Image (cartoon, rainbow, N blue to C red; front, side):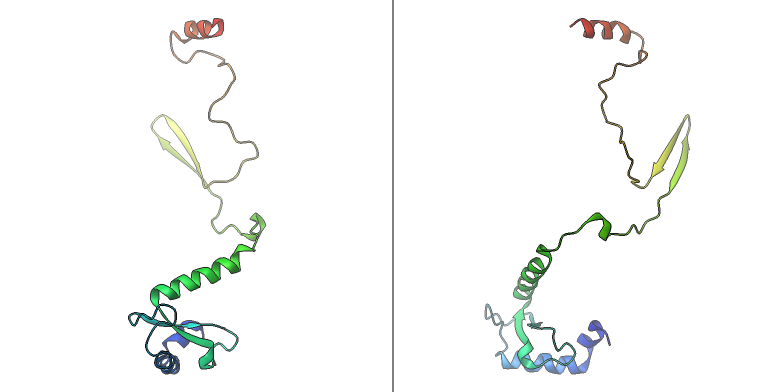
Length: 140
């Protein structure tokens, strides 16, 4: 049995109801009586919990407490690139749009990415009249 099946089971629903009644049908942190949920204080006896392993919380408090617990759990974890496997294949597709061929890749890292702007002088003028502008720029 997995967790989702367990949470949907009649056994869990009975245990959940007993915990809510034990806690006076109120959230144990803010005393709200709407949107009540049951939180696992400990997962040591998951699927066979004692009532002391569970507390009643409203939805907002349950979300807040779960967020804090996850933040503490994962804050010390160092994730490196080697921890991840690529799940999408590296593909290259050539698309022809009129005069130009465009190559599409799915973010394959390159060893030496080309800069967006280059500091090199152009080998030939782009448009007519650019040569004059280029000479003037060099003189300035």
